[in-house]
Structures are given as C-alpha cells and as structure tokens.
Length: 213
Ligand code: SAH
Image (cartoon, rainbow, N blue to C red; front, side, top):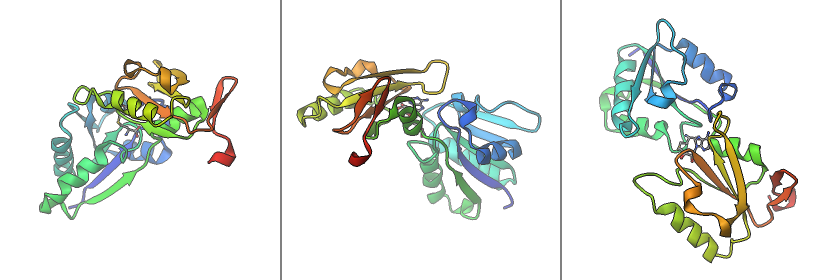
C-alpha cells in the first residue's frame, strides 16, 4: 500500500484559518472526501477529485477514503474546525478498527482551529464551557435541558455567548446572562460558550481574569 490517508481540519470557515500544513496536504491531494459543505471549501483543480457526501454517512465515507488510499491515491478527509472534535477522525479510526485489510495504511491527523477557539477569540477571552452541536434534529431537547441544569446549579448569572457561523459572512455573536438564554437562540451553526463565574464584560469584550484561570 503506497497511498496516504490524511485527516484534516479546515478551521471554522475563513480560509485564512486553514493551517499551512493542511493547505499543503490539500495542494498535494488527489482526492478530498467529506461532508458536502466542507468539500465545497476546497477549490476545484485539475487532478483533484472531490467526493462529497451526506452528513449521516460518516462510516461509509471513512471506508471510501481508506479504499482510495489503499489504491495508492493521496486522500484528504476533511472536517470543519478540528478533525478530532465531533468530526471525522473518530469515524476513520472506527472504520479502521473493523477493517484488517487497511491496517497497513499510512494515516496522519492534521489539527485545525476548532470552533471553540475561533468563537472565544471573537468574544475576547471568556474561557468556560463550550457546547458543540447544541441543537441537532436528532437531539432537539439536549440543549434546553443543559440550560435548565445550569440554571438549577446556580449559574444563571454566567455570561453565555452564542457564536453563530464564526469567521464566515453569516457571523453573529450574542452574549447574555444564562438565565435569559433560550434554546432557540442556537442552531446547528452555533457554538455556545458558558463563561465561568468570574467571566465579565469590558466594553465590547468578554474575558475571564487571569487569576480565575
Ligand atoms: N470539528 C468541528 C466541530 C463539528 S460539530 C470543530 O472543531 O469546530 C459542529 C458544531 O460545531 C456546530 O453545531 C457548532 O456548534 C460548531 N461550529 C462549527 N463551526 C462553527 C462556526 N464557524 N461558528 C460557530 N459554531 C461552529
């Protein structure tokens, strides 16, 4: 087997946040595999085949990538943000575990800027808890329940940041006390950061003082 399978993160949206390492892997790739909106972020060029798939086909997508790599192709599996954060790296290793014929493949994981870091940078330096995938079609109740639990635990004063589509043209950042947060403020392109007990506002910025970190 001479092919190489690279699992890479494309960052939160802005091309400037694609690391040079990932850009080099993409420039060298023969095939890019991933969920359609992420594959669309890789520019078409001669010699590159883009394999776009549906959101729910992670394991099939991972197996397809390994099959192509085993044929000797240079395959990059793309995720948004970082590939290890609710993304394709786990799916590839899960597929690999059940596929002895691909154990010999050369695999590497290239990190990316995860949504939590991009969202925190937009707000300032809030630290705290980050909630990914706050509202999915298959688990609509989880986020409402999370807000309830945090309110009951006495976190109602905590500054809560709704960071929508960070670093894209649709970016919107809202911040309010947790007790005023409503589940429908989040959608699938939103990352929610709940500040810690010292997180505060300083003008347009939100930050956690050093002594609390
Ligand atoms: N691997 C990705 C996360 C994939 S899970 C990463 O490391 O960022 C998808 C969730 O990530 C979304 O529901 C949302 O909570 C968050 N997310 C991804 N990109 C985002 C962006 N540009 N702005 C806000 N949230 C984002």
